[in-house]
Length: 187
Image (cartoon, rainbow, N blue to C red; front, side, top):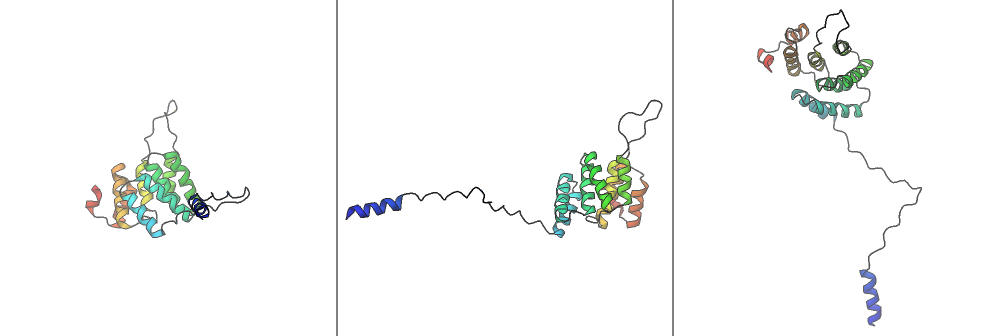
């Protein structure tokens, strides 16, 4: 009587066999990607990143916006402006050119023209041209972007543009048109 009981105990204590591997032709279910944040959350995150001048974060948020809507010209524009502000003008130019193909804007055209100025020493006999105010133009381009364009941000962006290029007529015109308070000029 002990023999059958011992055999039952040994079977119960034995590890269960490993599940058999899937057949060679069977496909595994792909892991589900995490859901994208809502459009409202992305816009708020983009505004926060732009206000705090976190260009890498703004670039990442623009990428999430493009995952949500691959033909969003303003998301390409956000990514391009973030790249220019972050010191990557070649990448910024590529993204801004895509934005212009989808949804052209005058301010982006001016930034692209400034990015197209050849770098390096002038040709013999030519005077060295002043470097275009890329950051000032990028701030003004951000001010026109529908994802972050609220009066407070646009006033701040125009103030930053004036810091980068004092006397810039376009930035001064934006500040006058929005009736920006003077304390925003120092931000």
